[in-house]
Image 1 (cartoon, helix red, strand yellow):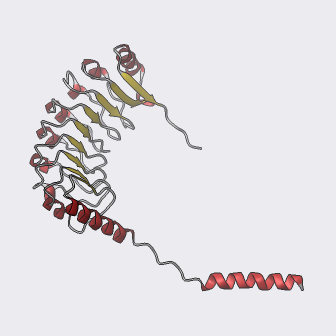
Image 2 (cartoon, one colour):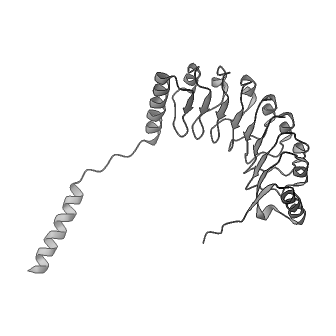
Image 3 (cartoon, rainbow, N blue to C red):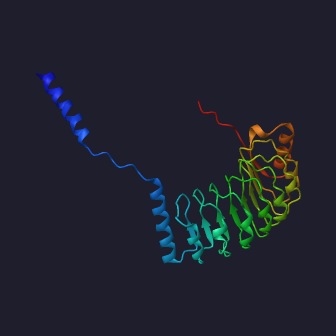
Length: 240
């Protein structure tokens, strides 16, 4: 009898669970669109100077250009197709477009006041338009296709450069740079020649993967540290 009562109880629990309505599937795209619309409306109402749309979405990214009070714009991790729609925003001092669908940096000439550009993880190899941003102070530009950073020669006010997750091996474009203080180069698929770093008189910090240091690289690191430069050699983490 006891066994029978337990069986009825189990049946009741199963039946109750079966009667529960199945929660609707989440529409992540719609949620992202709603977040984007809310942030746009809030920024417009407050005349905000910083608009963070990271991870959100818009039906029309050109609508952002109407917010002439915005001077710092974050649209990373979105479906932004290109930056042409943003070109009226000549007032921008910061632009974050990493991990978007942007495939050309040609429109960058429209942003003469940029001090910071984050454009990592894009499907492109040509970063030459960056050379037009003569006042740029921070550049995050690592892409899996990137091999040539010669455009950096023209950025005489650049203080921070991050080329992580790229194929850059030739750092000769950095030789004698007058302003560079920080160089980040994690997860490079090529082992770089670090010798040009010894010519950077303002350099204070370098980050690189330990496995990308051969004997020559270790020698450069030793000289940099002797000059007071903080060099962080990141060990690989093996996950079992």
